Image (tube, rainbow, N blue to C red; front, top):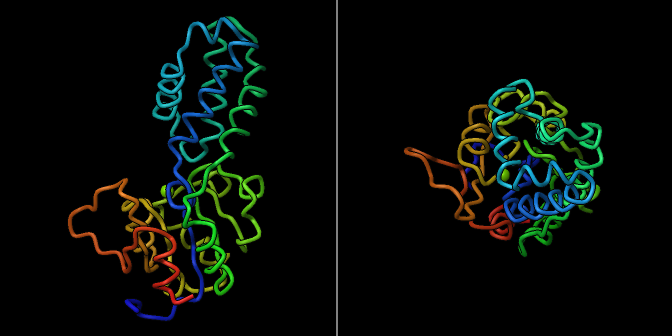
Length: 230
Ligand SMILES: [Mg+2]
């Protein structure tokens, strides 16, 4: 094992590690637009799906105070679109709820569920995400001893503080808690800076940066479970 100490717990990224997030968001944005066409037609007519996405990105740049809270950013961007279209900004709530429900309808990678079950049967697993997945709605919460999100914690990965908090929730020191994730910067480098060993789940979405040295590199969760010997 390439670890300085035995692994006693796991912190686990969600989006793009257990399921692909891009198709989920595209579907949720499409359904949001359909909902707006019905309930706020002027807003839907004045904004394409891409316009709404741009609005959200713009808001993210303008409001660093909301950067860790994707739900708040999404809700506020819908509110703005309603306002500039002369429609009731209060519709942002039900519109967001509609988006959010669809955002939870993720399709897990084939390897994810069985591998997560293997790992969670042997080691405490803490979810650690910058996104707004709801593990209970998705039906995976029973595999996790805790879930830490940037939204609730107030700051996201790669900040060391959120990794240290997740290790505390796992009940072990950072050098005994393996962080697992797909993003070289947010997950691997972030965890390593917090003193955790890191496993990179390379699903082919990111290029490894110069000098990148995860303690483990796997291409899916099944390989990870194998390498952990669980
Ligand atoms: Mg991810």
